[in-house]
Length: 402
Image (cartoon, rainbow, N blue to C red; front, side):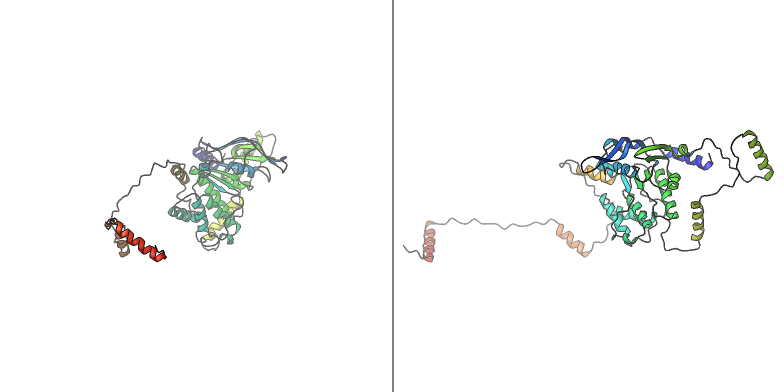
């Protein structure tokens, strides 16, 4: 094991928790036709668990059951058989949904809204205040590299830029569980690297990430554990170290050795090896690392009108679960008995600003004033003689003569 791999395993062990976020037992989903006959068994008796702070990968070819599993976790589909829990509740639990951020494979966004309006719309769904929506939108747009294009309509964006704003909307509610379906689809290599770095940073802060992707290099870079689907069943599961290790081969990496030293080492190795081939070559970096290095050097001397590199992770994406989500607070308030009225605390300002003329008028109108009610005198009772005269006048007007 190399030093880099050892450091990564140590980091994964430190950030993972025993708290189970998603629990799946015997999960089965069978789609039926119009006559209620079984048509396709999309998920077949699947078992796995996802813990807090880990990046969990769902892998498999098209039609293997990955997307169906994601929809079952989101409560968009009902399982035919089996049991699934998210944060200890049913996926249809309202408070549970408020703790989930979801980026679908296709970004279903309102094309005539700009970036800031899009995030404001989704933030309003989670009952965030106006100031909170503005603050989070600013941080997220900078984080995904769209700070300079926030006034452009989303319909004008390229697919890669739509994935960036889609990722931002998935994080607007500061979720504890983040489900990403093909998050790097359409992104350039720089954007892919930034998204992968963001996923790792979120996991370090106690978030749980479930990643579904066909780009195996992306999964290998960020995932702690994976399951591989085929035909609706899990064919392999475990950590990447367990699944990718080759126990029948050994690699030794050293600095450049003098020719004489290298020949002596090879002579000793060949003496003890009876079968197999001993090969010596120079280690190479992958194309992504080389590409990013070239772009980093070019960025220092050139400008671009394309998407810029994102900044650090948004400040509000807190580590772990420190307080209840905003929607939970709203639901708690709505569930209080009607007789109980919340206490309102009023704090005096440290300094009194100058009151404008309009404010003085408003204050005067709001002051309680004494209103005098005019005295109503009782009407004296009519006498019989007066009533007779009134009756006589009324009869004459009507033309009735005695």
